[in-house]
Image 1 (cartoon, rainbow, N blue to C red):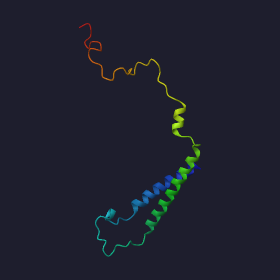
Image 2 (spheres, one colour):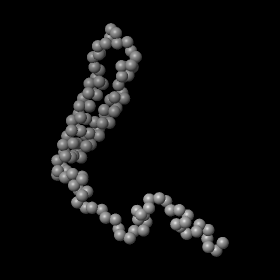
Image 3 (cartoon, rainbow, N blue to C red):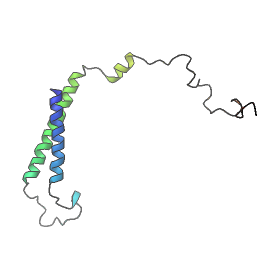
Image 4 (cartoon, one colour):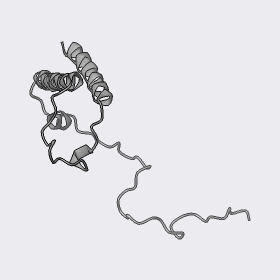
Length: 119
């Protein structure tokens, strides 16, 4: 059921994107520009506008349905609970990690000479 609903959700998302992109531009995005004087009322919705609202409502319904299905399948376990069940331990004697004694980078005195001994 979850997979079927997820596929429908994806098709609705693609359809919603196409419906928005195919709509006729009315200009003055976000209310910028455009007079607003005598024609402040909205024109009746076109068929494409109604289709966009329908796809948007169906997308929200499938989103909520998927959320409910996934919440039921988690069996009430938290991610934090699952992480605390199996603690991660570092291997003992691993020399690739610093010991933590000094957080500063090594100096030239701490290391072997940079010039080979034969020269």
